[in-house]
Image (cartoon, rainbow, N blue to C red; front, top):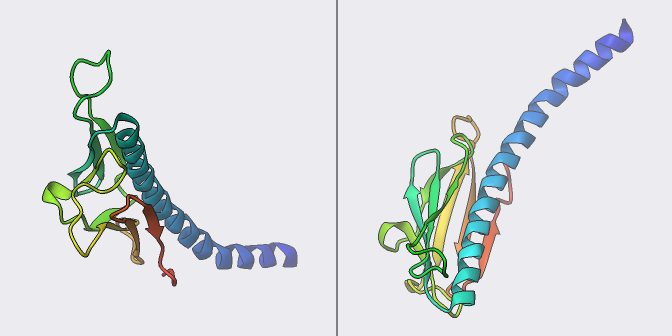
Amino acid sequence: MIVLALMAMMALIATPWFIKLHQRNQIKSAAREIQTTLLAARMKAVRRNQQVSVVIASVTPPIEFTTIEPNPPAPTPTPVPQQLVLPGRAAQFVATPAAPGGTVTFGGDGRLANFTNPTPAVITVEGPVGSTRMNQITIRTTSGGRVEIVTPTAWQ
C-alpha cells in the first residue's frame, strides 16, 4: 500500500511537468517546420537562380504557408504551390514579415529579395493555442538569407 501511495504521489507531481514538456515540444516543432519551409525555399532559389517566395496563406490556426516558384522546372507546365499546414493547436502568429502579404522572398543568390532595413524578416509564433501558458518563438531570416530560431530564455 505504501509503495502504491508513493507511486501515486510521484505521478501527481510529474503530470504537470510532462504537460509543459509536451506543450513546449509542440511550439518548437511548429517553429522547426516554418524554418525548414524557409530553408527549402532558399535552396530552390539558389538552385534555380531565380526568386522563390514563401507566402503566409493563413494567419489563423491552422497556420498555412505556400511556397511559390515563378518558373518551376519541366515537366510541370504551371507553377504548383507547395503548402505547409501546421496542426490547428500547435501555434498562432504574433508577428509576420512586414513585406506585402507576409511574404518572404529569396533571390537567386540566397539573400532576401524583399529585405526592409533595418529589420529582417521576422515570424513570431506562440503556443500552444488554448494553453494558459503561452511561449513565443521567433523565426528570423537575415538579409543574407540565414534562417534561425530564437527560443525564449525562460519558458513558462
